[in-house]
Image (cartoon, rainbow, N blue to C red; front, top):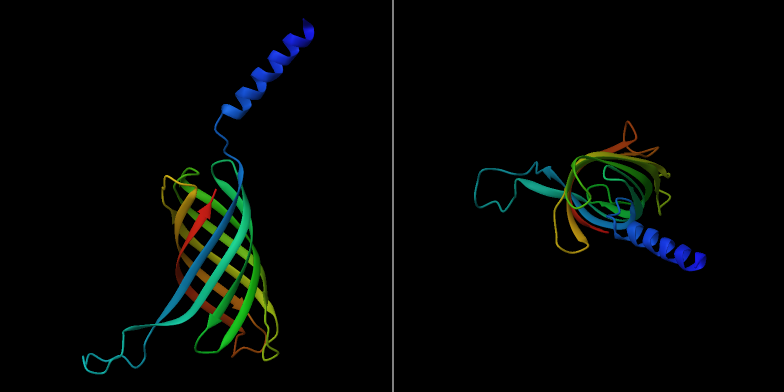
Length: 179
C-alpha cells in the first residue's frame, strides 16, 4: 500500500511540475543585418541613378542561448560580417546578454549588450574585439519561430585600421528566435 501511495504521490508531483508554464528554456537565434550610409554622390537630379542611402555592410548571425525567467537571457553567437567600402571580412564570436524591458517570453521589447572576439581571415588586419549594444522587438507568433527586429550599434576594434582602429556602424536587422 505504501508503494502505491508513494507512486501516486510521485505521479501527482510530476504532473504538477510538467503542467505548469516554464519560463526558463533553451533557444536558437539567427539574424540578418544591413548597415546603410548616406551616399556622397547623391543629388536631387532624378536622372543620376544615385540613391540617398547605400548599403555599407551585411551581418549574418546564429546563436544558442538560455532564457532565465521572463526577463533575462544569455546566448553564445557566431557570425560573418562583410564591410563593402573596406573589403573587410570578419567572423565575430561573442556572448550576448538580453534584458526584456516589457513583455514576456512570447513578445517583448528588449535591450541587449554583446562582447566578444572578431577573427580576421586575412593578414591585412589583426584580429580584434567586438562589441554591440542595441534595442529590439520580438513579435508575437503562434508558432515556436518568433520574428525579431533589431537596431544595433556595432564597434569593432581592429589594430592598424585607419586612425583610431575602430570600425563603427549602426545596423537594422531582422531575424528569428526559435523557442
